[in-house]
Image 1: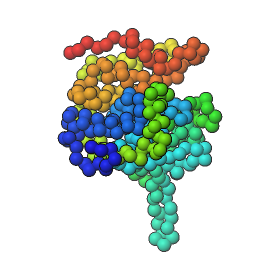
Image 2: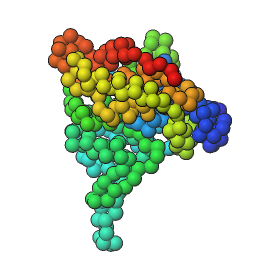
Image 3: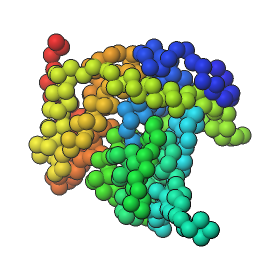
Image 4: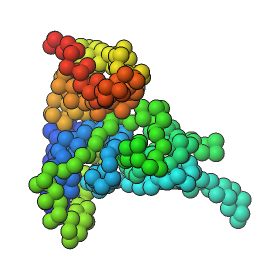
Amino acid sequence: MSLGTRYNGQGDGPPGNAAGVIAVADRIRQAMETVIEGKPEVVRIALTVLLAEGHLLIEDIPGVGKTMLAKTLGRAVDCSVQRIQFTPDLLPSDITGVSVYHQERHEFEFNPGPVFANIVLGDEINRASPKTQAALLECMEEMQVSVDGATRRLERPFMVVATQNPGDMEGTYPLPEAQRDRFMARISVGYPTAQAELDMIDSHSAHSPLDGLAAVASAADVRSMVDHVHTIHVAPGMRRYAVDLVTATRTSRSLRLGASPRATLHLVRAARAYAALEGRQYVVPDDVQALAVPVLAHRLLPSAEAQMERHTPERVVSDIVARLPIPAPH
């Protein structure tokens, strides 16, 4: 299929089974990798979060492709996409929407905000005030918006892909712990390899690579894939392994804030999606280990001693994974 043609809804099989999930996921991955060059693992984590019905936080310095990654995911799936540019003067109603009174009809009419979309790109989320950042909390956790006493449901799939600059840069507000905890995973795009950067010069010089990227899957496909992910088996030993990983963050001397129970749920859900992308009907320890750092690290706060020794939360999680016994197969 040419990426320059519009997706017509015909694929290699129903995405509600293992073969269909792999086929559709491969189309999305290949489409994204035509734009995001040399970062296959970043694309894989983004797909994992999408199928796990989570939200993705992309944190990195400006100019490495954070926004491009989010736009590419939204372009590859034929669904509604809205972009919110977070600024210090952004209001909560600019995100959720507002009710407007019509004098002719003598009634209020709700004008939905950009959060009413399947994929919401929150660009530079930590440049808005904490009050505005908090407008996303209900949306991300409960897939609904409460405005003027009325609750409105959001359509599936619903995914917030937020980008943020490092907290030590000017004009940023740190994300509250409660909001960081609602992001299933955090990734960094990082600098490209020299060859990827050379290829980027060629592909980006005349036009944006997004111009030739058309949808290769539909929202209905994604919903079917998500439903299949729910059927992936997680053995009792694997559940215990996930709980032990999260519990170890709460007792680590290098951390003053460990991961929450929500983190455990996110880790298991992400592991299911990761297994589905591998074509398996069950989760294995490798799935949990591959996701431990992106799912857990952004929720943790290092202790003062760890900060002095420059032990990052990512390193702490990696050390926990390395020393924690792997559950025996049953």
